[in-house]
Length: 464
Image (cartoon, rainbow, N blue to C red; front, side, top):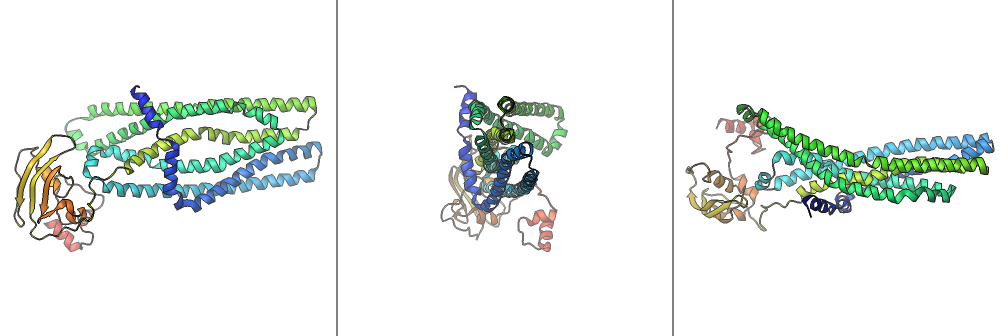
């Protein structure tokens, strides 16, 4: 099995049904009222659409055969009322689903931010931050799209199609049977397209995240770019990444738009065949045209829901891939959880002791090999050594940015692995080698360390 086939097999295992079940389980209950209202509106849309097709037989027969103007006026008024009702219902479901979708997106943004804050620094060093941010921005709407497309397709398109097919069968069951003979080949073709589109969508998301990541990293490191005249070299690199993303986007366009010739061909055959059949029956068999006109109207109105349903799996595949990639981040288990029963760290002399500490980054070579020392409280302890000796690593282990592979780190005789990270870090002052400012004023940045600090305390900290 080659790499491409293996990737397709892996992506195929990420079923839409599994993603849908998880999305509904996590969001359905919170928005059940809004979805119930939207579904009710969509049912009204479906019912009024089917009613328009069904009543057209009465219009044709009463107007052209029986010539009863009073009945025609009543029927026309009912059609007008149906369209008004459908317009109001369409507005209601659109607003309801938009509000629910916006709420879901906001909820997952909050959830993602909280989860990212719980992950260790090692996670962010393994994942390039620019790529991670770009991937989140692209994929977070996938959750909303999976739910909204499912609701609108089931409550509007499926119900509308069922109603219109019912009208068609009631007017001419034999013609209805003939019309839908071509449906199975159409469904098989769409299934093949959607399976290929799933892998292409995942590759496109990855490619776009690399594009946005490269741009973000260039902006953040613009002084280095300028200092070393890296513009041309980086430009060539980014051009290649952009070209790759463009090719993947074009592939998705070719795959997703293949549904159009399939559905259009099917619709063209069905509609032209029905019109020819209706015309010959009226001309040569002197059959009243009302029933056949109603059948044709139902068939024409059924085209839109059929077209949307034909594209549904393709659209759901794309949304499900986005949702799956978002869940990959949410399902990442934090490596540095507090131990059960972890206690608050109590400070007294502020001594820091390392006992035979060993540490390596990932599966790399050991950076610290049995380090032991005691830094007494109230005194200055300097770590001296060449670049790469492990000085920054030792500092990173004290606030538990990482955990050692073996050995013990003690503060005032307490193992920092057995205390809560929050109490540990609240008692430490940390000055990074790289000054980083968050959005806001200098005063705001200083106060982040202690939000309750007064202006005088902030200014004193700035002077110090």
